[in-house]
Amino acid sequence: MSDTITSEQLACYRKNGYLLVEDLIPAEETRRLRERVREYTHGGRPADALTIQIEPRVQRGEMTVEHPGDGIRKIDGLVQADDLFCRLCLHETMLAVIEAILGPDIKLFRNSLMLKPPSVGSQKGWHQDSPYWPIEPMELCSCWLPLDDATPENGCMVVAPGQHTLGPLPHIHVTDDYVIPPESLPDAETTAVPMRAGSGLFFHSLLPHYTAPNLSAHWRRAMVLSYMSARSRYTGEGDGPEFFPVKGRTYPGCVR
Ligand SMILES: O=C(O)CCC(=O)C(=O)O
Image (cartoon, rainbow, N blue to C red; front, side, top):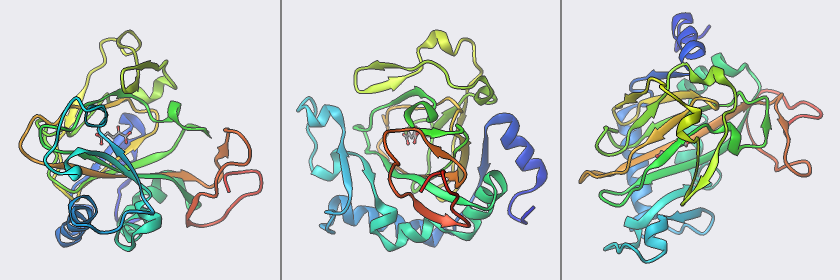
């Protein structure tokens, strides 16, 4: 066991499906990441290598924003395109926690910056991540790391502790989302997890989670890095993409 995470913390992760590690990265690093994001969204830093998703209501013209950067919902590909985010993905403390959970051979499944601009950011309905993802076993671990303080008002994470043990739940398509129907998560206890910027919420890919719309005057930007064991298998069409190598070995017949 590393010094970063105790056996009690690991047991909590296995039982509840999540673990909060406050102040995972230094405040100065968080500030630099936040500034870098601002350069992409508002400062003219070239974003050609990134995949940008606009808030659906802004995209459809149902809502107007002062600056195009105020209408962005998601940016994919920062780890591959940006030195600061690449370093974050390989951050020593982050990887110590991931290694304690997943073992020594690790690949990155995805990296997304999730933005909730003030008064614009919409909710993300209750869902589990694994039903979205063509990976077996359904045992990925994401680190959700807010670059701004995350509060119930601006859309911090809300989780259903322990419900990852239910296995994959049904999901249905609704307007702009793919969610667990309420009857499939009856009477589940839920917990909001407010976090300081730079803290990390590590969560299992079967843990049901939700974020509220940002009704506040404050940004909520969060980087999410989803890691998997290099022994995982790709269950989509073909051999799948070559995933970003993080640490350790690659195994024949497993994710590339
Ligand atoms: O950051 C958010 O608002 C939602 C993130 C999320 O649900 C996810 O990454 O699975």
